[in-house]
Image 1 (cartoon, rainbow, N blue to C red):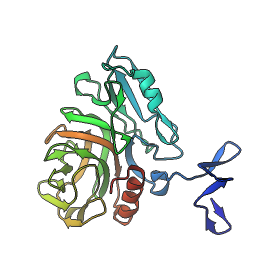
Image 2 (cartoon, helix red, strand yellow; image 1 turned 90 degrees about the vertical axis):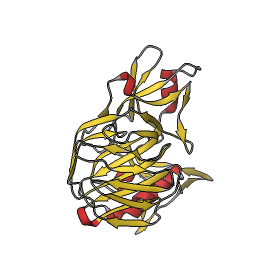
Image 3 (tube, rainbow, N blue to C red; image 1 turned 45 degrees about the vertical axis):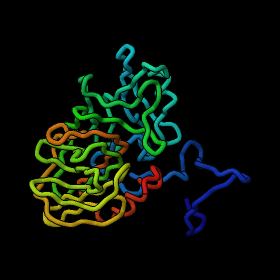
Length: 281
């Protein structure tokens, strides 16, 4: 929203900050930066926060351990509706919740699903929402994974990730033709596709940018050192979130976004948006 030619950064009612402004029922301004509004064109976008103002769907579909019943969980104030989540799963010491579906917010219908109970990642443990940096996060352990078989990307394609690996050589996602992001606990973030492209990073909860573009490929962690080099991944099809095919993922994941295009010019802006929300670096 603008006042004349100037963008409005903050709105107050008296001394209280206003989060949203409506014209009738239409939202015309928000203090919250929707990542996919500012950087549109994503092929698939999975997150536990709302990424696009026009998205009216849910964040995840959850199964509770008590009776294996399922329920969709949406957003409140642009974040996962944890109150509805705990109301459904329960808050007792034996109440656990697992993710059956992680919904694609891009609008392309590339939802990631796991119907096998034993392979579902966890979102509620002993009646408490699993978190990283104070935000909800999905706990994926070794053989857990979600599959988006409909997703298909060809070079150049770009991926952004926010999460934490608990083991070295932990693959964030795989596909039928390639292994992609990997996290090394010593601080490296890697793209793997026949060869390694390794970037200097930090340990713990991180954001990673990766461009798959042949000899012009790139990888970067937390807006630090940008590493460039060659990967021979030609495409990404039949996505496995959690690295089912090769190195298994063990850790927490909060966000994973794909573009079927070169987003190198937006890498700083997108990583900054992720960091502004999750306070990673």
